Length: 400
Ligand SMILES: [Zn+2]
Image 1 (cartoon, rainbow, N blue to C red):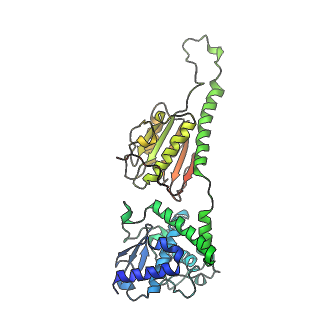
Image 2 (image 1 turned 90 degrees about the vertical axis):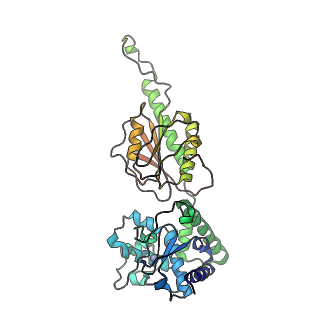
Image 3 (image 1 turned 90 degrees about the horizontal axis):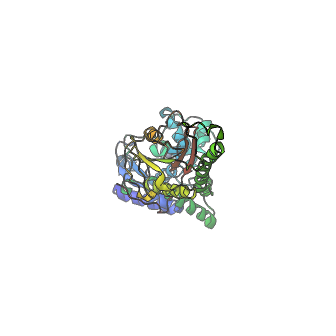
């Protein structure tokens, strides 16, 4: 059989035997690459395969390898590795631990992926989380396996660049949609046939659990910011201070009706999802106007590795978004706080993969709207709202 025929036969085998994984299996894109020891994946649903090393594999073994790659992707093993700051020296132990988590869920009689670890080899019972296998399991000797950056997030030399368009690979938003689809297919399969493996069931349930709505959380943080500023103004300066009334040169703080100054810094670096950015922006627009702040009074700064100049527009959808380079929000935040009048409330919309200023800006409350799956930690002085839900097609705008 030609390599592409073996791949389609194996994919059909996998989708027939694990039907709830079908939408993930059919999103995989295969890349022939002889630098891979046999098979490896990246975080964008691309699977690199050595035709030579895999030419003698049975259809079910190749099918299981696909199930396995899909498992790493769906369960976010790469971002889980980032969470514990996995070092390259621990990489093979990490892969073994994640593999054991996945292999617990293989159906009886299916072959194990090539050289892949089982919970027995790590001297632990089955159905544990990968992290439990990693921190508590014994280390395998003699065999090891690198499943690719799909399993641990560390780039491999065969990895293609991250996708610019959907034909290059699966983007972050598409991945989110695929995950939700698989999770709901898995729960439906469980209801109808009752045969979903335990780890898979646990994953699907946790993914589909109702989550705190980020809109209300963001609304609460912005309202709190606005009213605290307005409130503080009323409280300290609301009553005219008659003691100074006879000093002609002193300008009294007549600020009782002051509207808070709001600035927005938008991370327009290449890693940002345009749709999620747009959705977050139109939400901010709406929330500010219910707080009595018109969007046209808000200064907006684009920022990738450099900050753009301030824009004022009538609505979020009129913004010109320019960027596409690396990320350094220190530039954007400093441009925003140095512009006069300096902002009382600074809203930063980003995926969070950036450096932050070491100290909080003076007299400015900072709220970070973190879009995308699994954003990294932020400094303590930043209030964070995580926007991680999948898209519904809203939030388009003009890009140039
Ligand atoms: Zn693996």
